[in-house]
Image 1: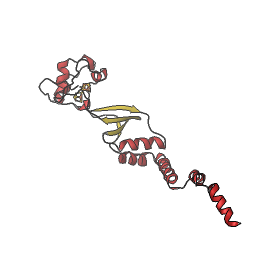
Image 2: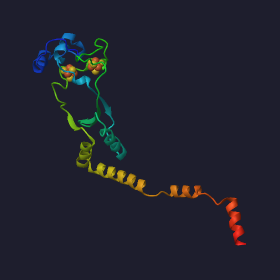
Image 3: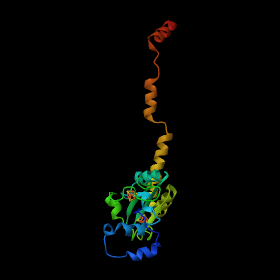
Image 4: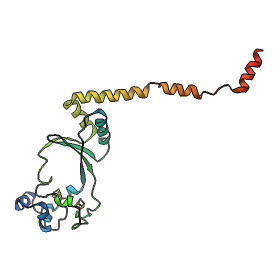
Length: 192
Ligand code: SF4
Ligand code: SF4
């Protein structure tokens, strides 16, 4: 990945040229360079598989996350959810090369440029959420029962925030300044 030193090849030609049964780690540096020439795409984000949301607070958590820049979610069939974080690797040089090539993580070495996202879109993609609105629309459309629970979760939070609580009233009563001995004495003196 991102170690291109060779002249740029047409991605389609490169894909055919190295379309064999070898493991990605068996590709030579020159082959990797040809395949990745002019591309740094997979060095500019990371993905982490997450538990598929089911309950209201889980949806609420991911809606919150999707309000943040650089955060996206996608779902693969049958149902595997992934967090997608836009983040350029610190080891990617301005020239678009891996600054630690040769001792870069195994995870990078196992990423196969013959079948990577530059050449093939995700074939088992079910949904992609670029922002919170897209996830909310999907829940409403695809999982109406979950959407109803999320709406109830939000309504409950709104009611709790707007209603005066018994606890607050009790605390206010406890902390209200008491008359004190002097005031009691004065009141008592006045009634004699
Ligand atoms: S997306 Fe593919 S072609 Fe681009 S740097 Fe990564 S492995 Fe290479
Ligand atoms: S370590 Fe190197 S190959 Fe791996 S993501 Fe960073 S720049 Fe890319």
